[in-house]
Image (cartoon, rainbow, N blue to C red; front, side, top):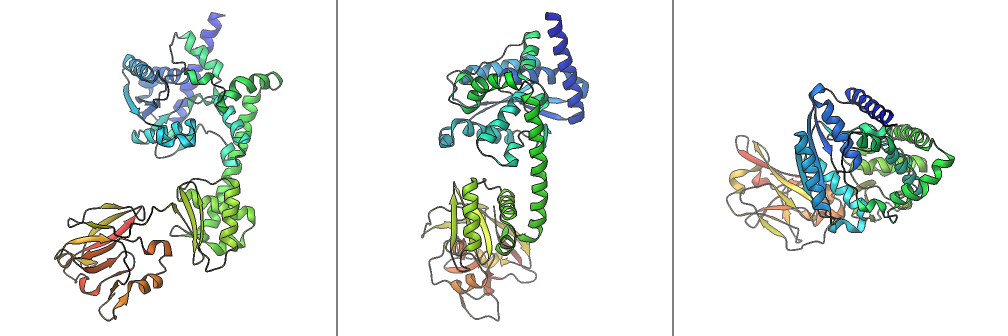
Length: 445
């Protein structure tokens, strides 16, 4: 029996090496997400075995969530394992307290992803396996997820870093057998025995019963996940075709939505939100959002809030943005150095781009204290040399600036004179001459 297990574990290592060779090119840098559980311990062991053969540069990252009283000991264990293999070790300590309202699992996952993003390598190796895949598909189905959610986890996915899951074709039993046959030690997270977590309930209470009647459930659920993935790709292709006409400059055309079927319009709206990196609303929220956008009067001030985001409609266009903070009516920030800064009223960054012969005259701008202020009312400027003095109210309306931005834009002043309204106008007397050093005020997210 022992010889059989050793043979199986050797086959597992050989199988993974061949799979990895097709996924990861030689000389790549690989960051291993290392929790210290049996799955990541086995992944670390196998990658270490074959790193020299493929000239891979390995490092490992442990995220210390601080949830368990044993978290410090787990971090020390992970560091010791990496030291034994001469693998570079990184520790990220995070605090889930501000995100607890999302639930412990969701908060921990969000913080892990943020930690991964701080340590970019060519590849991020994750230890998800076939049982994780099956559990994920079932959980997503029970939550009422769409085809994107139920397409579950791919073996390889391109993000800022390539995410690779070499163990996705292996079962938990195979991984544990490998660990025992190689006399590996690992961490047992006590929270895995807590059935209050949905994943643990499925793993401990549901799947042991399911496997008696459907022993191949892992492979059949993986096959279903692949079907969902293909359907999701088709929906994305359709949304991309619709978006080529409907989405311009981060705005979505309402008329385009109105001409589509309800299902296709929702697909495009989801694509638009994803394009802006907005969180995805629940199905009922999305339906309500679409109805308000498409059926409101042309002059209606549509604003649909969900979570920390808002979707608004103005002049036949849809906008999506993080919820705006309370307006500070007396906000004024000195910036004589013209340094890039955050502007809290719009959630954007303010940048001063040096120019020559265009934009704002640098000499004239710096002749008095430079400040950025919010609108107070009654402001005016002359937008070009042949124009009359114009009120800021009229200029904002003519340039179709959405109403919620009008009182929040950073207005650039030199002393008591309004010099520039970004994206709208520069006062004629402050515009740079042909041979004059200038600066342009830009807003970006």
